[in-house]
Length: 54
Image 1 (cartoon, rainbow, N blue to C red):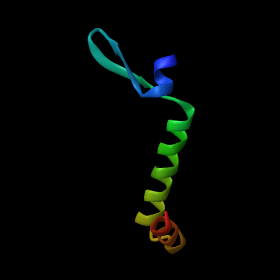
Image 2: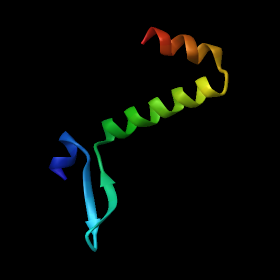
Image 3: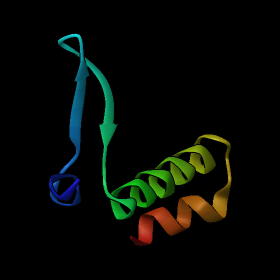
């Protein structure tokens, strides 16, 4: 689990990728990025402006 704090860890089952373990911080970053993308795709102008600022 300590390795997942530094970078995502792929767990295999029967030699095939099964799940990915990642830190809470990385998960939250990905969720926020996905929400921003969804807002922009949905035409939310305030989200577009926020994305341009940073």
